[in-house]
Picture 1 (cartoon, rainbow, N blue to C red):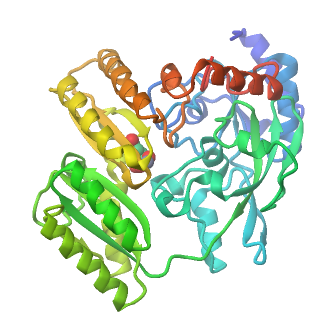
Picture 2: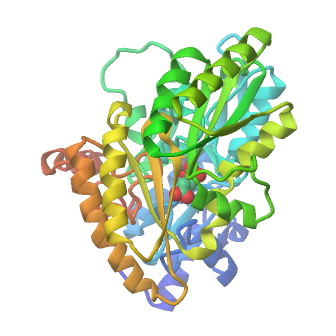
Length: 468
Ligand code: 2HG
Ligand code: ZN
């Protein structure tokens, strides 16, 4: 990375101000702090400047200018990421899409909308609802994450079991490549077998190939009267036994879990226990419950699980308000533990491998972390588990990170044997970069590099993220 003198920086930024209004080229300390980091809080933000283009043409001009002057760019959405992919800690120019936040088009026949990349997830969810439709990719950061960032990370969330991940809802993308070319990819088509689908390369590319500027997204019909159950479960094995049964018999839209230790953190923030009894684990499941017959079926399954000893207590929502309250027990965990500077793992295996993986990982973590608080939660119905290790107050951050990093090597070796991924939905960014080889072998990474070279020959797009 080239470092610039103050004079050189001024000249470089003046060059940008020639095509983007001066008010949208910022260098004040507040902006540098806010736009230079994501939710990881692990890296000291140090951007050269923050640029907020308002049009696709301005994005193109900026990318061309960056190529000319070998300026590194970090595309930036809502910066709710957890892997450091949107962090600017090495003098990069942050390109925030937040001014490009309009829904441009909606078509009820296609059941699809087109929006600018800076559109907030919740804005488009609400827009879909107003049309009697549903955008089902959903997660706790819906109020600040942006669709461009969701696509660049291939975000998953809490409804994947039923609806899949972001990738499954993107039918078109406009992107400015690292060369400054504008590509209009797939144009909302459902069927299109005209060769390589470049749209999919940009999904999950973490800003390393170019900048997503517009997206066309599919919508679907809303859930019919969803109900939420929270179940108290004695052990990890029972969770998957319950999953097998409910997945077969109910129209599930979520199957999440969390541990008692994780629950205690949201209780400290003012939420209430779902029921009196404490159990080591909890399942939160959501299912369509439009009539009596569905309710009776759910209750019968609950009884059956009780008889099998797979659960010991439970509650079913009686209203939308109660359903929302129950959801908070799961959704608020991540935020409630952030003050403990957790070391995060976001692992995935095929669902059939979950029980074996959990047994091995549980043994590893018990052995390696006798003194640390280890929290389990996540989207277990998708084979995706979040393991958060909380930093003891008196332990230095660097020592803590080193210890957790060393345990990760063991964890990922187990994961590799099960054919899993080191990142299910948070991305590789900076935090998981050292471990990429557990999921992608050298030959495969060689192909990733070749793709990067084709789209970004000068290496200006989010350098140092995913791989070096
Ligand atoms: C969630 O599922 C998010 O709550 C955050 O993906 C996970 O904090 C985490 O590790
Ligand atoms: Zn998650």
